[in-house]
Length: 253
Image (cartoon, rainbow, N blue to C red):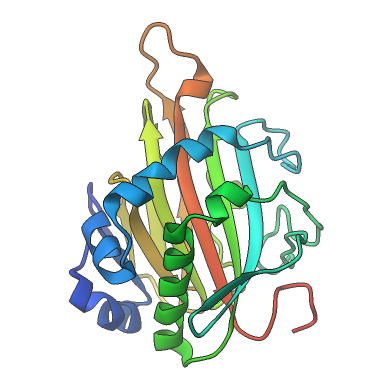
């Protein structure tokens, strides 16, 4: 049975780990993200403008021009967050029927962003959450800055449809949304009919997903275009971080 919430069903910081263990996903509001990660709201919001500098995603196989992104990989081990040499993003067809099997080399996240203490703090916190889920170990992390706009009339946050990512945990932060409708988040149990539908709307709220237990997708966005705005002014910005044990996908691990 799928439950629908117009707003995200957020949980208290203290309930995050238990909720993630119980149902395979948890939604945290921005205040909870700050409390658990040690990041200030001011520092998180200061990152927002860097989403305006994302290059186009030139790998969209549906022919669209609605997605812009940057991508960088890290290893999170204990308290250390270490960038690795720039590398392509790769997924098997099993997890991404549309873009799987492709070596997609995106522009890296800018050094200025990665130099911010808030960036390291976020990744370190996510590593700790994943260690609570799977046991303490190094985590192979891929971070993606996404902007989906309405250049093509609509924008598709997940053109591959409902999917898993082939990792241990996925974090989807809503960074900003402007002049759009849609972009509903849908999370479904891999083993049964249970699921939830809701819309992430609060900047720096986050959806945490146990990737082995749930599939997820976001519905297309459409513009709400006040006079004088272009389709590029109607967008949804997210930070998607995936964490995987034993190596990056494509490395034979």
